[in-house]
Amino acid sequence: QAAAEEIRAATGNAAVLLRLLDTSSLASVRAFAQDVLRHERRLDVLVNNAAVTGLPFAVTPEGLEQTFATNHLGPFLLTNLLLG
Image (cartoon, rainbow, N blue to C red; front, side, top):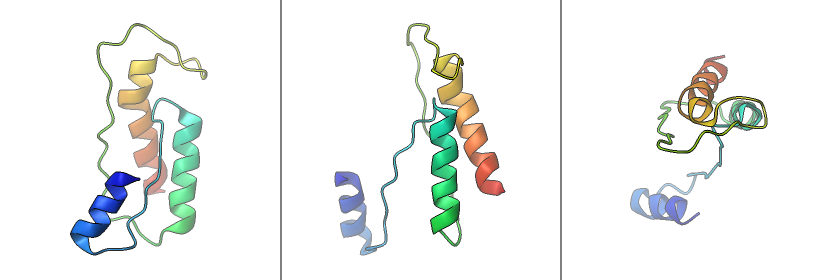
């Protein structure tokens, strides 16, 4: 929330929104994309900047290797869902 406030103050744009997303969770990605598509008229820029590295092997609740899900599958799915 502090980052959103900082951006609002720096830009003078009160319409800056904060939305949270867990790219390791495909369910979270789908819900996020649905919310954006439902509430926004347009999306001009998408910066896929989530990444993890050096973590011990872990599997997400959806059965995916966590690093691969976070760094590749989640951003890929998000981009595709937002493109429609």
